[in-house]
Length: 603
Image 1: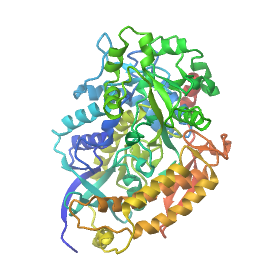
Image 2: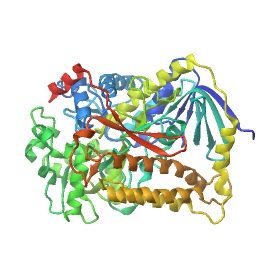
Image 3: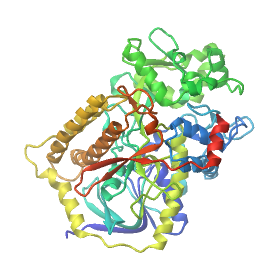
Image 4: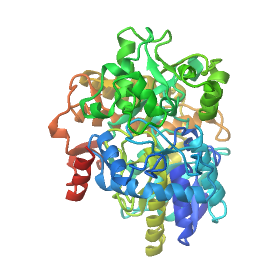
């Protein structure tokens, strides 16, 4: 075997966003050696782009809030196909994780009496999101890094993992390469935690960073783990629409939480036209009541702009398709109107939404304190991911754990805004804790050198191709295929077409040609990402075809209603021995009576 640099750790964490950093901190605190691999520079993980806040029932703004309400909101938002145990743990433990983050130095916005301030967000019954203006994710990463740097964690920056290494079905390490110089690396470990984020780069319009190519999903799938609920891809209702160079960049839900309203070309608040029955008693029926809610009136009901993201996204698409959209193919999001209500409206907007103000001013030359924004749905988050145990976060591959967006279960069919950041903290901690325990109970495994050589040979194959496909073109065609055929509104005909086209894209990706050499070669990196993108694209498409109903983030134009048959099942995807993708429906575990009572009480 060729000589490769080799590193040995008790626990290897792949991904340095909120979940990865929290897992590394917890594992290190248990006394084991920890390695942290990140695809970009430390501090550049996509978590820094999270804006709105961290959902936790601290009850600092409304004392009626508690873990039971948060649990019920999460389950209802997920259309009750969530893993109820994960939703329970999340609701119970999120407040402690936020207070812990504060103790480590996070500087949250404050109430007048000095407690952590919380804001309104879609699908949450009470103001629940602890925030730092609209830069909450950045503050989270800063705090976790400042705390973690003292824990003795070995960081391997700008490395991409190409394969998980296994022995007798158990994970024993990972094989990857250093992106700058192209050198291969072997990482031996007793346990591995995947915290690689989402799959947004499988679509052409997305709020996700370049790193989100489904790496963790694909690595786990190829190593023998199962994927669950991959049909549920969340399209955030409000991404920038104009100018084209910034299309898809996120406009935080915090804009609507602070009083922003959605209007169509005629200036009409169309969200009042379509309020789901199960949210009707909690949704304002007048603009005046909605405004009072955003100002903290505990007796007011929330405005329809703060309904769940899947519903708001579909309402926006309806306005656009029926010819009532904005000039550039979106709708209007207006926060400037609150100057009619507040004497200091301009300063209020700049103070509450500093990133949004500067983002639109610098990128679109729009002053959001004076004029509305043009927004439309953007691929934002995947609820599906690696199937894990709710308590330990271990997959069905011994020694392989997952946390954050690449893991699945807590969100069901649709994630509530803000739950992602508390999910990172709650289950990042649990993944690190149980990975450390696994490492303490097991020894290092043996590396399969034949597997390493096989992966290495496949990785450099694009340099040997002549007259092959351009990897950038393959990636673009994949993104456009998914956007057009497996997007917000889906049909069997379009998704079957997508499946057929994916087979052709696989053949083109296998013949991708790269020129130059391994050092500083973005085309090579793109070619290597294609396998992961194709894997998750096929998983999303097959799962969406299997679920013949509309639920949460999955909307089937040919099956527009919910189907009782699918209300108690998850879609489960596994890899067969011949390498093909197999899908089955797996029944949900029965919810215990005490949690059923919680949901009934909250109704």
